[in-house]
Amino acid sequence: MDGSTLGDPALVQFSGVLKWFAAKHGYGFVTCDETGKDALLHQNTLNEFGQTSIAPGCEIKALTRRTSKGAQIVEILELQAEPVPDFLPEGTSEQEGRTYLPARVKWFCEKKQYGFVNVFDDPRDCFLHLNTLAKTGLGMVNVGEALGVELDDGPDGRVVVSVKSWS
Image (cartoon, rainbow, N blue to C red; front, side, top):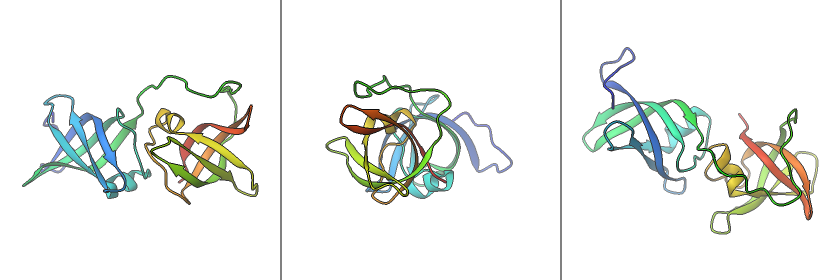
């Protein structure tokens, strides 16, 4: 923690990298760039920033408060996803000028690292891989969660090639 504050002397500005986050437990830890110590990131703080999940390796700028158990992130100021290699299935491509379509998560399995979404007013399933989520900083999605998706036609059907939180 670099010691700079924004108005409240109890708050300290913090920059670090997400070590891990478990949405099912409701928390994770971010390692401080400067000190190497961890700060707790609670699910509610992430939700207030407009996201329900986050991928390991994301860079975070935040405000922290010291508690009896250590530093806790109380507000996320900025979040940047770690660059991830392109793991899109063969036959898909990312093109400029696409529009995000509103969709809901139908099913997603963290263990299998994939799932399916449905674009509103379209019953067809669209394949969603965990690497696509990681490219935009989303670590996991929950059934029923609203997303913005960009689609492409793959050899076995429609594939999500880009995704964002729908807020």
